Image 1 (cartoon, one colour):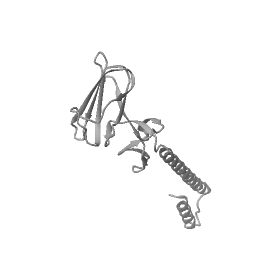
Image 2: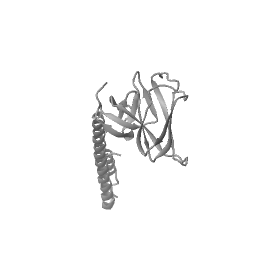
Image 3: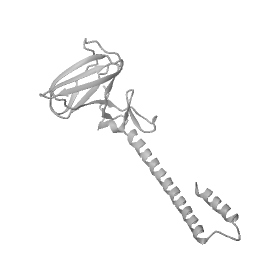
Image 4: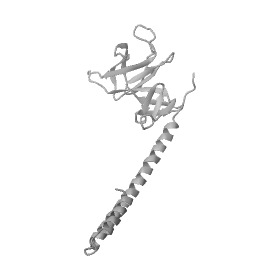
Length: 201
């Protein structure tokens, strides 16, 4: 109930009360206190809505400023474009004796397997040239990444797949800003690094 409705209800109550038994002062004060609480709550809601709108506008402006920049983001898939090799990265939480990258097409079929051998802890680049195991150029599209790593004892080492790309736009289709890289929309929370844009080849 809004404050206007509350006032109308209170006035109707006062105008229809029994003149021989009017409302007690304590009850009247209690209802006025309720009215004050309603007005305070509405004012707080309006201020909160203003803050939310200001934050949303700030997020939109921040996202828009990334257009043209290079970003590194967490992803388990990569988009292969025409004549453009994808930039696939990964991060190891510890030294690995064996690192394997399996690339699958949209149907789930393995098209390329890369054996990267031993790798130190930290960042590494996956040298995929957009070709399958037979050396044939794969058609443009989205491809899934499956990375595994193991240490000398054969125990699994955590490895996170990442992709680098240029931000070409910002989408608000889902109600929050997402960076557009190629045909992929990326949440800001998935971005792990932002760099200056490199010149187009």
